Image (cartoon, rainbow, N blue to C red; front, side):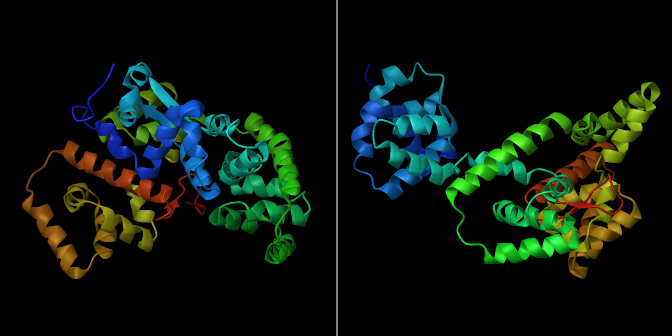
Length: 345
């Protein structure tokens, strides 16, 4: 079956793929047999860049693959999808170049034992991780912290005993390039002694998961469900309320964080949200604006006239989602509702 490229329109999903990702999807679809001659003409750096792109592709819709491989439409159209991963990247490279070169490329894009392990370690609560590291040699701790995200490493250091934290920082300052064998040994130890135990012993409180679900509900549904839950399991309902981040919690944000939320928020959404808000929350938001901007916001709120309570609730939920998204990106700091003093990023 032959398809005329002029009649094959670009699928909407194609917009999600940039140039390197399109090249990566094409090479993944070509495979060893058809892609081999192309790989042989690439430099090591080009192979690394393309391999890294393949490893991070994830699912490729069939329409995208078909568009990229129009001359192989008959074969590609029968595929539900392709899937790019570290494993498929390695399989693609093996047989097309020497094993040591494949090993070098794969280690460069994912680390000796897989970068995902270090990503998981960066998501471990700093108090839990620090408690484990207190029993390790300071040099080992220095190596581990040097491979974590800086903001997470900083929080872990703050949880270590004073003398130990200073010792670790000094070792990190003096640290030279660490041999791959040592990194591999540390990774293996962390994987088998720490991460495996953590996965067995540290399970997320189901109330936290449910609090996230309630946060995503509109205000009316949220109150209806919580009221019903209070009648049956009052302790659980109370725990969920404590864990939820509510619109009222926005008043507890640091001034700098409020300013970021105000800058990012849609002004009409903010006006709707504040129209039904308590005065103390209104003042927090007005305080983050210039006098002129605050006056314009007040004027817009007054010009709206009567509005449905549901619209105000939806606008408040939108501001909560915005604040959480900003916190996830590290742009603001939220007050942790589980603690009076703790801060989370």
